[in-house]
Length: 282
Image (cartoon, rainbow, N blue to C red; front, top):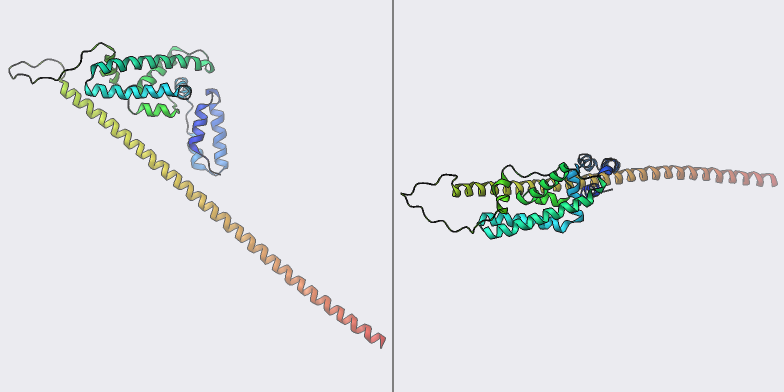
């Protein structure tokens, strides 16, 4: 019996938080009984979600369009920031704020299963939603709907552009070459900062790509190992069936030979009895 880890994980993280551990243990036992030890270990390792992570997972299921839109807005915000499109930053930031507030309101409605939504849980959930905007790796992770812990914004990322994007800004004009005799302005070098930011974003994108590739390779290896185990089990079962059939065939042949010997003895007895009868009559 094949156990689908992805389906089991989706099922578990869709359950009420209080039912997670019992259901996980049950699925773990089922996978072990089915001979899928590797899948069973992965199921056992699934962490029970925190309250904020559970709410985020349920938002993905109950308000997926809004969560997906928030992730898209984050991508557009990062692109507008790289391109220096001030007006776009303003509009997109307003959209981000609207979506976060809307999703937090939806979370309050879903929080009935947890009791009252505490300020700490609400803050963690808001951090998770903001992380999905700022961090290119966090958005796809949120959309999977299987968070065990809340997400956090990379240190300094929000201060660098996300929060500042909510303030009025003027369109950024192309900079003119600075005259050699003009003294340098104090403060950070904007081109160098932009270069550092782009380098950091490129590194994050590279890490995300490498992580996805490792996950794909691990999944392929897992599926190949399961297929090999299934093939070996099929072969073993077939060999056992063949051995059992051979044993039964040998037993039947033995019984047939015994029956043939008994028949021969019976026929000999009939012949002797017939001769004895003829001798008496004569």
